[in-house]
Length: 203
Image (cartoon, rainbow, N blue to C red; front, side, top):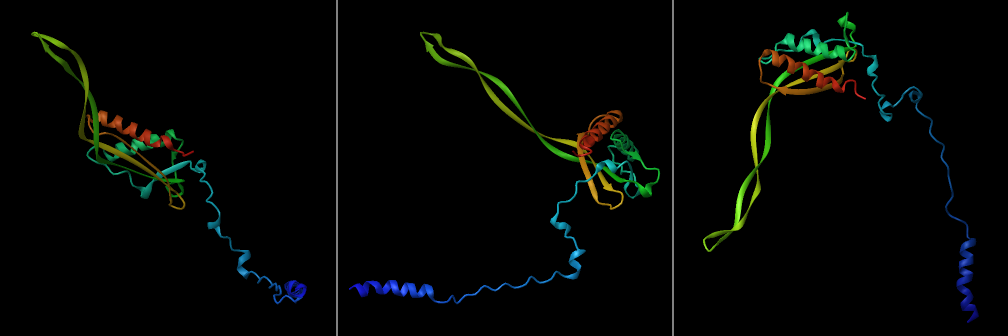
């Protein structure tokens, strides 16, 4: 019995002393390709933040003024945008070929769906009659009324492009009412341009 009990122990001990059939082999790292030292994968790095401080002057994109519409003439849009850019520290370039920025602007009409909620107070009475006399109470209930209507607005969009690369660097738009006489429209145009340029330069 003792021999039978010692037999598994002897077999396990013999297995531990047998040579390991697996051997570690280290392969040498292959050399880098010759162009690896000069090639930089820029996609692995985030794009550098744009320095808007280097933009000092501008000219119209393709040398063309903004198109006019029935709502505002081309010269009116150009003047409003030029004044707005001037207030943001951007001056017209003396040499359009070397301008820091190229500017495009346009105005167009769009339709907006508006909803207005009005709360009306509706009187009501409760209770009944008893012996010919009214025996009840009075009060008021709020009745919401939602009115839907269409409104025509004028959208002013301003887009800025890098003068060297031609890539778009910033754009914004603002809208204003389309009604009023010529003086009111000119004022609304200036306000819309100022509102659109409020976010320039981006923080």
